[in-house]
Image (cartoon, rainbow over the protein chains, first blue to last red):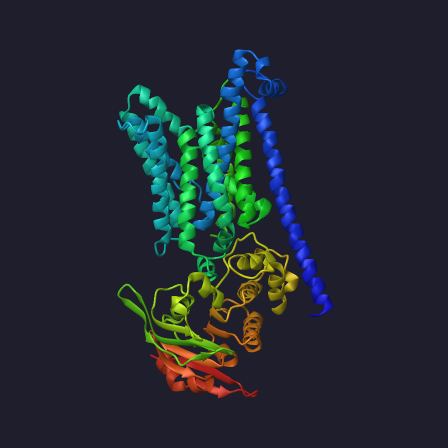
Length: 353
Length: 253
């Protein structure tokens, strides 16, 4: 080995490490931006309570009036944290979906997982089972989860069919969205006025139902899933280079897929079960993250989660500012912002598909 | 050491793609080219060897029964290269090779990855994005992914398809050089019969899942056989440098 070649290797190694540090820095930067967005989210709201007053209240609750305490602990904090957790869960699910289905347009929303979860939840709302061991509110979550899993399995089966390309998978997802939405509409038509109101909540994703128990469950799900996601990340990076290549390099792609689908179902179903269908975060988040940190899933997965959380926090701020005195359901905001981004993605990809 | 294939069959449903195929031992240090018309089962045979298709029969590498090895163990000995790296990946060249090593391979990922690039003479591409490379450069990167994993057998599925003349030779020269220097066995599906003749030690000609000829290029490339298998009228001549050339005159039938 010549000295010159050694220098080349050392230089390449140094540059590669610098690249890794830059990516880690970008992920850190996203975390900082997210923290700022959360502060912004906390500081905005109809009551006009500012950030200083709010932080003071968090650390010294006794200094506040009862109303202010309720605003802080039951409204501002749960909303803001829910935006973070739901955004992270949806975007992480989207990033994993895009990797294992090898499809840039995959996300819980575009491929019908959210719609299926909403259908499951609607069924549980409209026709709750009278069983003692499962409260009606838990039934909603469980049914949303079961339906989300079923839809992911269906998608998986479709994507494995011979000759089913990227386009047919997306078309199947769209078909799933429409059928689930039609069935939800049918349930709405048949529902009593009281039930109808709850059902409509599902079609308008909103953070308004956030509470500390839901936050705890969603945080636990994320904390459970993220380490497994990160452990699977190197194998997923290989999978992105082609199924056969990954398998011939010793990746058990079937096991990888099954485990990933389980994580996707868990993440999207819990998120959807608590806040309804919030679109485009799961699609756009991973794409923005990919532009920032590239395809290496060790960075892409956490970056996606952070971008998703950031996007939903910003959407949450926007949802309070668009109409003074009214909190627009955040699902409407993400759809309005997401559609143009989605269109841009489709056109950029169109040249390649 | 050698790779021994005995009674290998692959079936898709009721259709037998490969029918009880046996070959003489393929020794390490040689490059074996699988040739034959479309649908002869060349790629299927390669994929079966890589463990990507369900098969019956016996495959031994040295004393080891390859079919009994776990996924990861098998991958350590035999490495398979599909036709193309998928487009649109936001990965760097060096990064893609490190990624290929990260699942169950070497200790010093970076040095190994860079070494693989240098052996193929493409270390200057280390920091480029995969998407900015030409088809030929991408194929060399894919080959570097394989070589970095230091397997005993390279299984290459049409490594030169869609490459220009320069890179067809670069890729095959690189394979040839590694095979000789590191005593590897390379089994490659090749469409270009002249490229096969110039680079392979042994040609295996398949038709409808069976071996119709196996031997050195001079033994296998016979006008009569080419007429029978490919349906072409062809001459096999030595060029002024002594290499065999297949000259195709017309399609029969």
